[in-house]
Length: 108
Image (tube, rainbow, N blue to C red):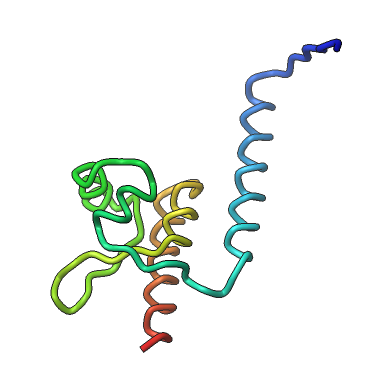
C-alpha cells in the first residue's frame, strides 16, 4: 500500500474544515424533525462526555442549549446537544436554544 502525503495552506485547510463542519451540522439538523431523547443534567453530561460541573459551566457560558422545566431543573435533548457540539458560534447556540424551546412547546 502506498501512502501519498499532500500539503495545503493552513487557511485553506481551515476553510475546508469549516465547510465540512457546516455540511455535517446541516445534515444532522435535517436528519429528523424529532427533538431526540430528553435528558436531565446527569444524562446530558454523560451523553457529551463531560462532567456535570463541566456542563454547568457550559450552561453559564451559554454554549449549550437547554430549557428549565417548571421545577427549575435543566433539560436537554440529544439532537440539540449534537448540534451544539458542531455549532460554529454562540449565535448558532442561541438559535438552537430558541428552536429547541419551540419544539418543546409543540409537544405539550
